[in-house]
Image 1 (cartoon, rainbow, N blue to C red):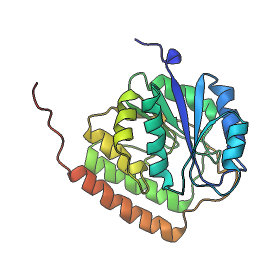
Image 2: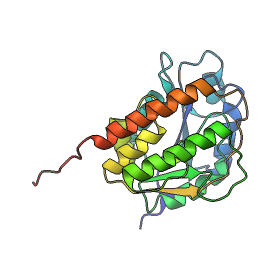
Image 3: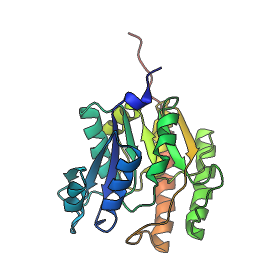
Length: 240
């Protein structure tokens, strides 16, 4: 078996106006995963996000305007594919994800194609809002019906992908609220997906853009996207 510690690792951080947290996030990653490269997708920020990320040693790709989490992450996966990375990890720019948990993801990616850092697969100290918890329970049930597999933290943005998934996500990644649909997409491609318990913090700076009204829109939109994705016929490989 290939030693995962010797493989090229990239941490992708989509960031929009996160100047107050991005520096600490990058430092945290280098403290716990010194062999990983850090790529910040500066998603049309109007503050000093890009400047601060560069100062702390990260590679920075700046989008010409705000393309959203989906477009930003697909850009990161395309960069990972082009530059020969074996593992790509998605992390938030707001400090919610703890870099000390990265070794757990690196260990589990040896046996799986995608590993999701979960707040709920086992009990953690994380306390979610009522609306977020309702959404989590709903999407857990939806994916169990659609995929026949239980995922406890479908909206987690703390994920590790191997080369197979890097290539798939470089080719296609959902644009709007992509986390749930991206799981369905991979399962339709025959990927092995697992969750691992990870501690997470509350947002360290700024505030979430998801309001109660947006939460309702999010649930409806993602539900329709999941159903449509699951309904697409699976690709059948032609014999050589």
